[in-house]
Length: 218
Image 1: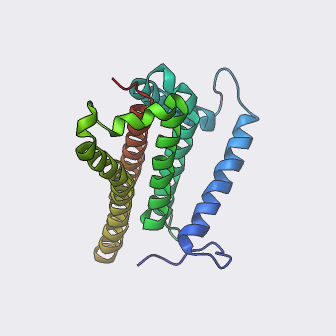
Image 2: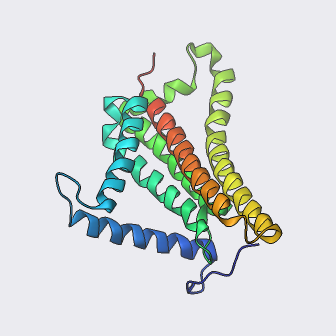
C-alpha cells in the first residue's frame, strides 16, 4: 500500500521509524534555528517558524484565554509534529506516521490524559464535580453520559486524523497509477492543504478540550 521506505528502519515498524526521524529532525531544526534568532527575522526558516507559532499562539489565547498561555508549548509541539508528520508523506519514498492508527491513537491519548491532568491540577478534586451534573440527584444519569463523552474524544480524534491521512495516501496512489505524468503537481498542492487542515483541526480540538478543563465549574 505504501511505497518502499528509503530510510533505514532499524527493525522498527515503518511508522515508528518515521516518528523517530521526525522527532530527531525537529529537535535538530529547533536547535539550529534557535542559535540564529534575531529580533527582526533575516532568514526564511525563522520567518516561517514565527508565522506558524504566532498562529498557534492566537488559537490558544482565543480558545483558552490568558490562563492557557502556559499550555502554549504543549499545543505548539503537538501541532507542529502533526503538521510535519502529514507533510512528510508528500516526499516520495516516505510515509506519514499519521496515516497509521497507532500513531494517531497515541496522540489522541496524550491529549486525553493531559486534559484531565490539567483539570485536576487547576481545580483539584472539584474537577470531578463537572461529571456529576448541576444537581446531585442527576448524578446516576450524568456520570455515564459524561464519562462516555470524554472517552469518545480520543476515539474521534484518532480516527479523524487517521482516516483523512490514510484516505489521502490511497487517493494519491490511485491517481498516480491512472495519470502519473499529469497528477503530481495538483495532488501535491492538495496534499499540502490537507496536511495543514488536519493539523489545525487536531490542534483546535485539543485546545478546546484543555480549555474546557480550565473553565471554572458553575
